[in-house]
Amino acid sequence: QAQLVESGGGLVQPGGSLTLSCAVSQSIFSRHAFMGWYRQAPGKERELVASFTTGGGRTYADFVKGRFTISRDTLTNTVYLLMSSLRSEDTGVYYCNVQHGGSVYWGQGTQVTVSS
Image (cartoon, rainbow, N blue to C red; front, side, top):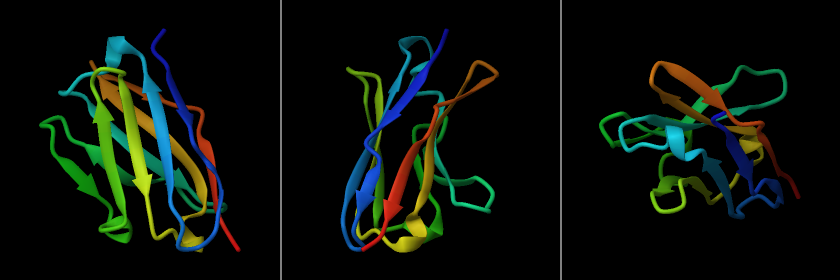
């Protein structure tokens, strides 16, 4: 069964940095798959933060442009989200998402809290 396992969340001060990792099952890890990071803040809907498109390009939500970077390692089947200049409004549960072969996969989520 295909799985996504996130890690790397935690508590960080405003202005700090954090890197999230998502280990993706080899069966669904593909340069042609949609791979993205979403987040959900308390009381808000889940929103797309950054992604690799099926064409291999990268997209970013306006609210993270210049601060977050999505990357991936094809040797370890891992997708990363490098987050810098973190703000309190970046607080939430971050989810890894892969869309491949007509199916949608989600990780269990990892909590990111930005607070002094």
